[in-house]
Length: 312
Image (cartoon, rainbow, N blue to C red; front, side, top):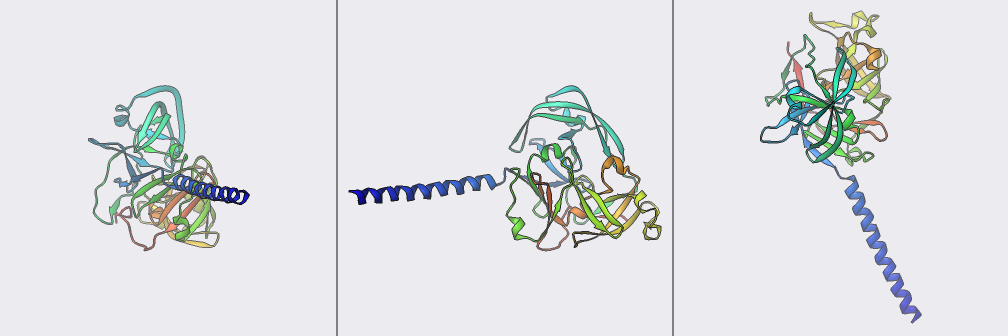
């Protein structure tokens, strides 16, 4: 009787272990899988946008990692949402100067299956345009008009992957690392700010600090940093630039043409910004739990649709 009972107990324990392990695996699989996958579209400025409000009349917003606030919307889009005015204003600094926006509050927001509550919305007064820079598409494709932008105030709640080859924004739970990190060569770079994705890179002119800005078509750097390197500066009569070799801890990231801007380094907390002319080369994975940016090379170095060239 004792032996039979012992076998039963061992069998029950074995079954329990199997089901327990299966439950752990199922939970881990559910935890690791994406929360949402959103199709990316291209704006006229060759920046990534997503559908914000669905059919029959879809409305689009920019994915802007250079924006600290959660949402910034134009009045044309705000009037279609149930917004409540607040007494708050938000000051932010861009390459073109200081911006002051009125802040509204949105009680509930659903974007492609994601639900948010009590979201602050900045009123976008106008578009900022950098004079002297215009661009040509590498291949013909439609351009989507956007009426606002989603910033790190919302994006920073997740880990996320920007894949310009598959044209997808993929959101994960904060802390999840995607399997493709181990399947592709990548560069892991610390994010030195919790609010915005800012990184340090090495250049022949010393270490420089850059904001990762998916809302920018091109890369920019403060002209005041190069007053002692006048022979290296390129000038086509409209905009000055410099060819800037970039590297991270000895790993080369190639040479980038950075355009000069008379921007305030103190306000930006960075020496320059890396725009889509650089970022399109990589899949970008933002680990917002541990504060790292992963740059993953594409299997084939092709010019995807978000790539653009400056008009001559």
